[in-house]
Length: 102
Ligand SMILES: [Zn+2]
Ligand SMILES: [Zn+2]
Image (cartoon, protein in one colour):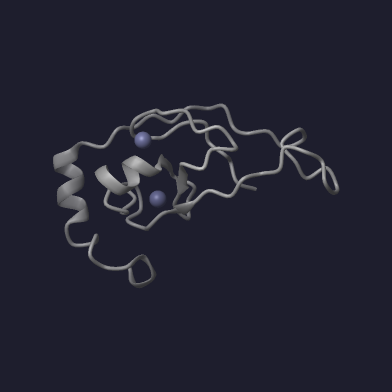
């Protein structure tokens, strides 16, 4: 199950479960759209993969108790800002390769 982490790992902006700005990599590293586009260049600083929009878990119990009321968002904040110079070096050979070819 997705962790639904509460904030952007870089800028610590709140990303509640219904946020349309939340982006995740395949390891659930979680950032806001602005950081993914402007700071990270769609390169995850932890794994080098790309990002996609985080799906939104239903807030209502439409079927089988599969909803936020039973499976709430994670509350543990992971705030690990990237260092721009270090990320530029790390991402330089990666950022022009589309995620499906990395
Ligand atoms: Zn951010
Ligand atoms: Zn990652």
